Amino acid sequence: MYESVEYHKLLSNQTKNMPSLANFFYTQLLLQIPVPTTPFTSKTILITGASSGLGKETAKHIARLGATRIILGCRSIPKGEKAATEIQSTVNCSPDILEVWQLDLESLESVKTFVDKVNNLPRLDIVINNAGIQTMDYTVSYGTERTIAVNVLGTFLLAVQLIPRLKETARVYKTTPHMTFVGSALFDVATYPEEHGDDHDLFAWFGQRDNIPQMMNQYNLSKLLLLYGITQLSQLVEKSKVPASIVINSVDPCFCKTNLPGEMSGTFRLFFKTFEALFARSAEEGSRLIVMAASRGPESHGGYFRSAELKPYAPFVTSDDGVKRREYVWEQLCRRLESLQPGVTDILSDI
Image (tube, rainbow, N blue to C red; front, side):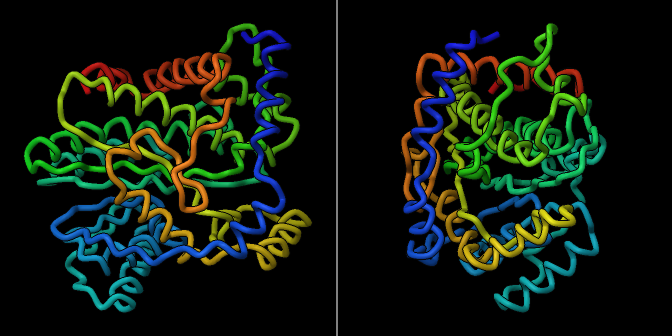
């Protein structure tokens, strides 16, 4: 467990690297985001959370850019099919390139079935981990708070199992597959719990309502934990025994109008929707950044895109104390994934 002085040092570094108000206004109101032009000819691309918002708009760009097969991972098949119809009519692509697959990151059985289907694909070129939730209501899933369960545990449970398929595609087709995670600059303002129980189980700690003073922090924290996991996973892939190149990166798509806050209610929802109306970009604009990250070269491996640029990580990620924390979070994450699906972390030893 971290000593208080180390924690406050990390928190200080975190505060120094928070986006300034001027940066926020620039990113949200002035930044020019180019329309993607990199072709995806012959590629098979998987997008989670694809029935609405950023996922759906990302699929439109990818269809426009010539992908051969686009898999829309959706919790609701009817909503996914409605999205597929909209994508096809908007882009005027063949409906045959769009497939709607059921995926619920809160369901172990759903994730397993989804992975089994992916493993039967001839190839897998790009995975865009976009699915996520934001809620102000406390519930428990996978033995932890639901936002953390979906945005971190469910996301990595799927991602880890898709890496072998990406690497096999690299080997067979002599290409460089990508795995892009949709993050958020809100990790900058996340509050990480200095103390989380005598048993040092980070995820079990969030399984108790009294340990979460502010539900608003849970989304931000989920993106911080996600970032720590991405940096560690990227390092493992880079040191892989299997010499097939894949690129793992993450991207902040800016603050966009999406269905993410759909589970909010009351005064907070009213405040959020007002703020959104004033400052949020369209989901289409944000999706351009996702497509950009998913088409960048090996120089972006392990990297993070913000404001359409590859940015260095802040000290709370790269400092000695930051490395200790992210290694600790990764160990906790792997332990929890293994408890959810015994044997899944063996994949990490073989990649």
